[in-house]
Image 1: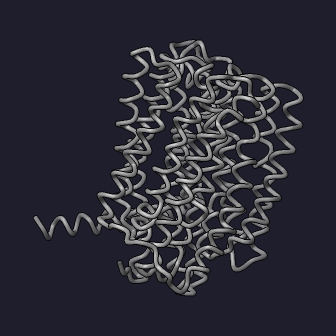
Image 2: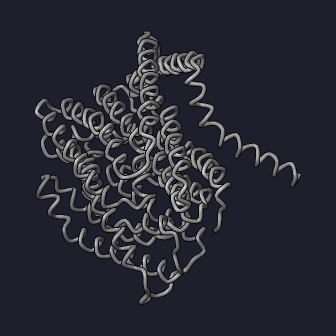
Image 3: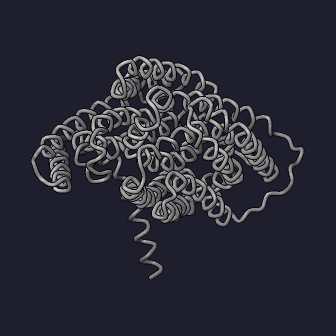
Length: 495
């Protein structure tokens, strides 16, 4: 698929619109999942699954081996190279599935919960399923087929939720969550394969594969370090405080992070291939402008939303989890703070991957991982809340370092990124404060949440009186208006 340079902005904005629309539906599915399953299952059930998923997540990074990003980023991808990448991911997935099946008793030995063996053995099959799906997803992303990816990413979890709810109602307990994970993997593979309409041939001896594996290795190394750091708190809580405390910790984390990731990851699937095309054109000014606008787009949407969650955490927990989960309110607030800084730093990941700086990404990942692990371990000395505080402090420290680190590698709009982030964070604090005051009114939880949303909206409306905020929003909204206008013109011509 060839996209000319002038159209890349429109394609990027169009992809973002489609992706956000789909992920809005997916977030709704996730919130329904949290609200329904949290009332059918126990913290102990969630704690068991969280332990295995955290361990399996490391294997998922091995299974990908950075080859999906290598395929997306490559200026040229021949059919034979694509076939080889498919079999590489499938082979790694198969090896990991067998290895996990036989190594499952080791997880039980470490955490002392006999149920973990069966859970790990059942979920081992997801390695193979996801390995088969990897290059199908990469191909759709590389070809900028964002609509197809959006449909799969919405339909798979929605159908998997139905499987989990039915199983939970039948008394399956934690097994309902196991079935949900497997169903997502199966449905995703079927969906991306049908849309791709591509059948891989047998592996070939072909030139140019070394570049993919070298890129993938550096990407893989950085992802492993990042994953271990990101899940150090989960493993630490499970090991030190047990499945029940981990279940509460995990529910607060998933209530916030799963919907957030369902927006963040697909947006990256739009941003990275587009930035890769811009980088290939050697247009540094356009590249920098895209990065700066990308940070503002994330900031004025997701980061402001996180301010609302932090301020209205209590009614959020009551509405989506129920009164029995109120002890996780401070955890949710701290996770929202952590996520705000993570979102501001996320554009850095786009730059690393689109410019092929995977070796540098690995080295930076070592630094950020060390910061996170130290903060979490130190915080854990004060229990569950201390662990969450450490988790929140870490990205606040590493975010400004990440911008400086990237600025040493090539052209980057450092001043625009710091300035834009400062404006976003200021407005986020005001949104959080207003929503916290509004949520403090003694009313039913749903009404408290509605008041908090209205208060946050009022703060944003007042912020529009500030010229620099209006300019920020106009710079982000311009490409979206261009997409919508082009679609309306197209519909007019075909009517």
